[in-house]
Image 1: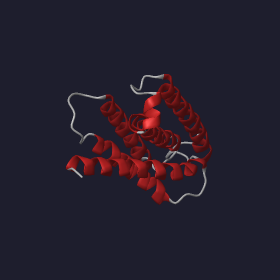
Image 2: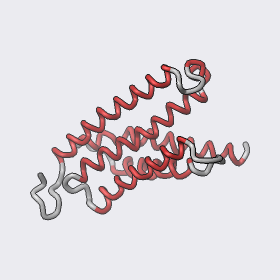
Image 3: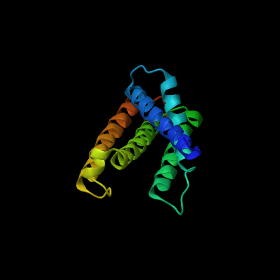
Image 4: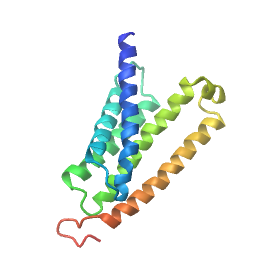
Length: 168
């Protein structure tokens, strides 16, 4: 396996770990007991996935770079909500939406890669502009929007009061 092949395998493994741990961590956004290690692992591997995405050879800015930058900005917001504001007040809902959005970006790329690399899917959408690809991405987006709204609502119900505020 070439150096690029090893790097690609590493990046792919990080991505799959991030998606799996993100799925396991999601119930915590709804007040269910989930060990914090799952959320921590999700955050670390999601950050690592986005960062390693910039290590591939490229000419110019690609859509994947834009997604990577946006994903890192969203993850930074989650880290600020968790580390600086300790999920107090509105920061719990902000964190919930940021975590769901971060997982969405990973799933968005997973779907795009699946349509590129899985022969049966590639036959349905060889250029990525066909209806099968668009509908799949739209369904994923809709599911994650619903999840983000539900997570934000749950977070507001469980929010600790902000320092110096009434919590409302």
